[in-house]
Length: 456
Image 1 (spheres, rainbow, N blue to C red):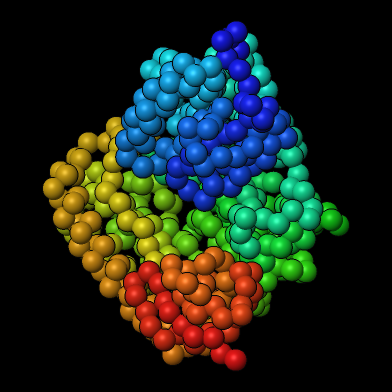
Image 2: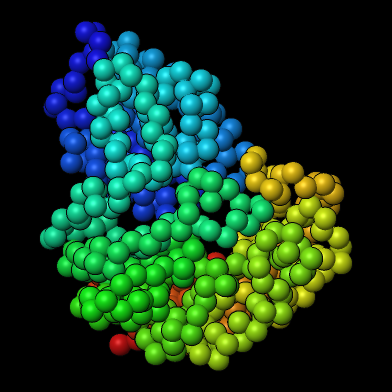
């Protein structure tokens, strides 16, 4: 730190964390915040008050790196202004863009002090201490040690910000889909130990969390060992977590079709605490395109899997991911995707135009689809997906269900909860409180939300 800079008047450093991307990044940001809190940083939502600005980045979307560099340009000016006031502000870049770009970030953004990858963020406090001596730090080597062993444990008795929480159980991917950067930014598939997961779930429950969503790039590839030495898959883990007092609801995301096994389907059949909602990406309905994507399943195999899942849990809502305009996709291939969507009728879905990711096999393929055709196909696909989503929501009208109240609504007295199918439900809260499971009857439906009334 230079002689012109001073500590905050209250001697308390503050960190502003901006999170891009998926739920796992949200979880990672929370854990980085906890690690920084143990090192003397307190969170702030006012960026001008921050002594550390930390960007936790995602590399999945188009032009992700350029968006990060654009943000860093704005923060550079803020850093300079703060220095004039005698306050030093450090800037850090974490997550998948940090992993992919590494030293390039320091070259293009000279005001960045620390670049740290998603497998090394437990070393963030150490990296910041080095940076304070004037060293610009890049730490993107895949850690040999288990980062979760080095992160602060969630304190018991501390009320969480939400009554629902994410819990990472698996990271990385071995599937190597040709469009995807995850194997290169998150590394190979690694499962957290059963003990780590159960201990964290128990602490969450003791602190008032009632719903846990298990996270992983391929969450249903999780495997571990039980207390008596048996080999467990995700289904076994879910059965075990359902026994924890205080946990009323369990979810998991994101799954791969090739890792959906019978035990996990049994969990959907037999566990009321496992919510009837499954995000199971297919990406395309054409076998030619699925093969080019290296998905390693056919459309017929995917549809047969959906049938087995629905046989186990008839009321389950399906969610999916779709990419249109992958290299070589013809109108016939796209029609196969529409046919698959019409058969499955997703309650929710995410769809995107294909955009090449540097370093992935898909970026090297010829026969790229013109942007105008991609846009037209995406519009047609999204129109169908939106119609199905609205039809599913409208099919909930008149049903009675339990919802978990999570936050205040827009209007006075309103509370918002989640249906078993992950939809937002708005009710007149009355005497109910956030964290309550209440019985409601659904009275109205929109594409993305439901309205209901409490049942006495």
